[in-house]
Image 1 (spheres, chains in turn red, green, brown, purple):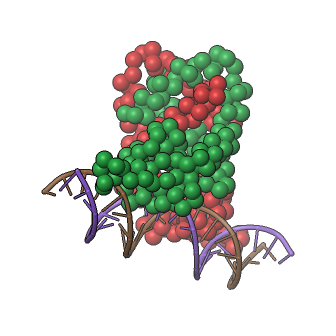
Image 2 (tube, protein in one colour):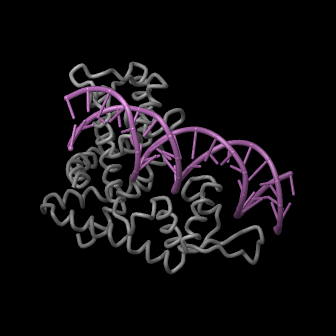
Image 3 (cartoon, helix red, strand yellow):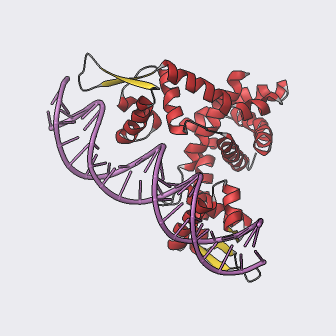
Length: 137
Length: 137
DNA sequence: TATTGTTATACTCTATAACTATA
DNA sequence: TATAGTTATAGAGTATAACAATA
């Protein structure tokens, strides 16, 4: 039991790290990609919202957003209702980077899952809802 | 089945992210702890060995080792057979820190795996070697 | 010549503290 | 007063380039 959760944690972390290596370009970092995916899935939002979602401080997120804006992957627009707020959104170029990265990650996973035997795939299918439940808890 | 790879990829990434956020590292960072665990499990070894294991450059690993040595958690001793080499080992204090920190960090995972039924734990145990193989590929 | 470890330097991501503008 | 965003500054981890000592 003590070994299961430790081994599983290590395996999950290593697998995620391996998948994370598959990205659209070498010059886009993980922190930036993560923000692009949040914007892609969650839509335009404030700096505070992004920093809470990524669990980093506002100044840290601000720096990441700055680099995305500098590279043309995100834009800031003032909130018309509250002049303290800036709405951050992904650009078309940012979407291209995010979608290409997702495509590569899906492809990597698909390739390697395809190499498994039927019995191994069955085990993974059975493990899937359990892993999901752990992730949601 | 059709979307196994996609669902699995999402579950693994989310779970890894969840686990990563739970690491309440108070006094020791992730990179240092990781090296301590390599030394704990793999025994005394050279800088090159450590840097290859962690997949970082030798200068980067050297910096991490420096901080461990500065804090009394690791020691360097010259290799008697090859005077170019320095053997890096964990100290008693390093072992204490590693084991205590691990106890704290796996708390989240341990709690949630403990909530699973016996059959679900069996599924996870069967899935472990497959996940490990994917991570290694 | 090749390998091992190291120093010098720079960039990214992170944090805390303090400031500005607005609510 | 409180909130949202930002700037200033610092620390940790990473990289590349260049070097000394040894094989």
